[in-house]
Each structure stands twice: as structure tokens, then as C-alpha cells.
Length: 338
Ligand code: NAD
Ligand code: ISE
Image 1 (tube, rainbow, N blue to C red):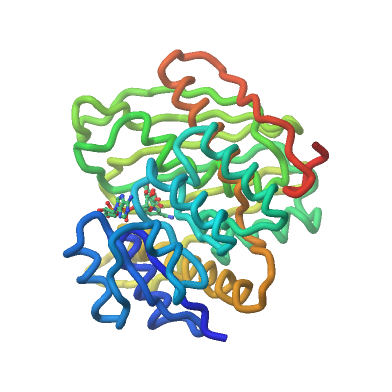
Image 2 (cartoon, protein in one colour; image 1 turned 120 degrees about the horizontal axis):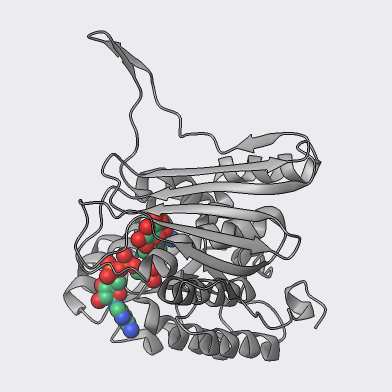
């Protein structure tokens, strides 16, 4: 079966995913595209033979759309995801699931009322081969019980529109998701420390930031978010356990020896760093939809947890306090006991 996908939001990542669904993976065809900018929708739709529809509701309702991909701006996600659940169609939503805890819970409740999982959230790091190896090592017990995790999330630069809160909401949200999954543990508190700011930032921005998370099992995580680091896009993660440590590999790159130097290139953006992860994420999602299976990737509950934890991190940044994340009890459908 070819899964016919309708896309809501034809911006940067929407266009990337349309290309991916069309040219990189098998078993999918993009049949409908919408964007509040119709010219942008047409530009993305025409080369792949999809039609342009007037809005997200039309995409969800279309007879030739089996599954929905939401790649519009974050504050619009909840409406489109809720429409897809109401129509009983599988929906892949780029992060964040929604920008408020209330909207995330509305989605969780709607999905539970529907009776089976339809929602997958676009936290692609779970599909990165390095993170998957890290998880295998931790689960095999090779490093003993994890005690500490040291992480860094560095972007070379960000535009002036990027705010201090986005360090948590837009950037650290990936570590929040991948660490909950990696450790099979929940983040219960968060704190932010702001060291000396780089002179290479726009003046309103607190950059870098050090985020400190504590999990329910007592694991401490430190995460450096530095979005004007200049030198490249660099993702680091090292878990320290009772018997040893395990570290995320750097992406493979050739070593160059010339003019008295030995060097390897550093990537410069997330598109290149996580291209394979995005491919695997979509390959597995489409295969699951085609088979009529419930999605196995990040769930609506994971989307809720990420939104609550990153909002608490913004509060921690603004108050200087250690903030409890106060997540609701996890329902049984999402692996909990409530
Ligand atoms: P973008 O601004 O390039 O594209 C968003 C597009 O959505 C725009 O073309 C806009 O006109 C359109 N749009 C907005 N509201 C709409 C609506 N209600 N209906 C139809 N179209 C609408 O942004 P982007 O960088 O592509 O980001 C889109 C989403 O993807 C964001 O939620 C972002 O956080 C997420 N994202 C995820 C990753 C990742 O690493 N997983 C990376 C980048 C962006
Ligand atoms: C962006 O939205 C992403 O999702 C990238 O993966 C992340 O590295 C970047 O910091 C965000 O702004």
C-alpha cells in the first residue's frame, strides 16, 4: 500500500520532509499540501505532483489523504492534530506537539477517547544511530546504573528573532525528549544557570545557558545550550554510570592532513547532522501506517512531557529557582499506571 500524505506547512522542514517522502523513502506519496502562504504551498506541491488545498482542515478531510504531516508553526499544531484525531487519521507532528500543557492534554485525552494511538511527535534523535547505540549500551547494563549525563547542544548562530526562552522551548526540547527515552526515566526538576554571555549574540539573548535537570531516579543531567558558538553544529552526550561511561560518536568525517595540520570537518546545521535520523524516522512511521499499526515513536504523552518540562525550564531561567516539573500521572495507554 502507498500511504498518501497530506502536509500542513510548507516551510523549511515541511519542504525537507516532502522531498524525503517523495525521493528518499518508499511507500509514501505526498498528495496534498497547504500553507497560509499559497505560493509557498504551490512551490512545494507542484514538483511532487500534489494538489494545493486551502487550509489544514481541508487536508485532514481530503479523501486522498491517509495520513497527515504537521510542519506549520508550533502554536498551530494542536488544532491540526486534534482535527486528524477526530478524522481517525494517523498524524505525524513536528515538535512541539503543542505550545501549552493544556493543549497537549487535550490531544492526549482525544487520542485516549479514540481508543488507539494515532499521534507521533517529531523527536528524530530517537532514530539517530549514535543515540540508539547509547541506549543499547545503557540497557545492556555495560556501564552499570547511569548516574550523570553531560550534554551540549551548540548551534553556530541564530537569527535576532530567537529569544532566551527558545533555548529551552526550541533547542533543549530535543535533549529533554531523548534523555527521558535514553534513561527510561522522568525529569522531575529543572534549573538554569547563565554564565558570562558571548559577545557574538544579539543583545537581548542569554547565551550560553547551562540547564540542570534531575530525574525521578536521581540522575543529574547538565546541558550546555550555546546557540552562537560560531564553529559549527555540535551535539554531545556522555552518560556516566557506576561501571564506566558511554559517549555519543561524532559524525563520521574524513581526516585531512595538509600544511602541517590534521583536521576533520565539523557539521554546520541540524539538517546534515540528523539527515539519516529523519530518514529512519519517516521510514518507520510510513511502514507502521501502511501496516495499520499504532505508531511506536514519541507519543502524545512524550509531547506533553516535553512541553511541560521546557516550560518549567523557562520559568527556571526567569526566576533563578529550581522548578519542579509537576507532570500529571502517566496514563496506562502511554506506559504508565494512571
Ligand atoms: P518555517 O517558518 O520555515 O515553516 C512553517 C510554515 O508553516 C510556513 O511556511 C508558514 O507559512 C506555515 N504555516 C504556519 N501556520 C500555518 C497553518 N496554520 N496552516 C498552514 N501553514 C501554516 O518553520 P520550520 O523551521 O519549517 O519549522 C516548522 C516546525 O518544525 C516548527 O514547529 C519547528 O519547531 C519544527 N522544526 C523541527 C526541527 C527538528 O529538528 N525536528 C527542525 C526545525 C523545525
Ligand atoms: C531547531 O528548531 C531544531 O529543532 C534543531 O534541531 C535545533 O538544533 C535548533 O537549535 C532548533 O532551533
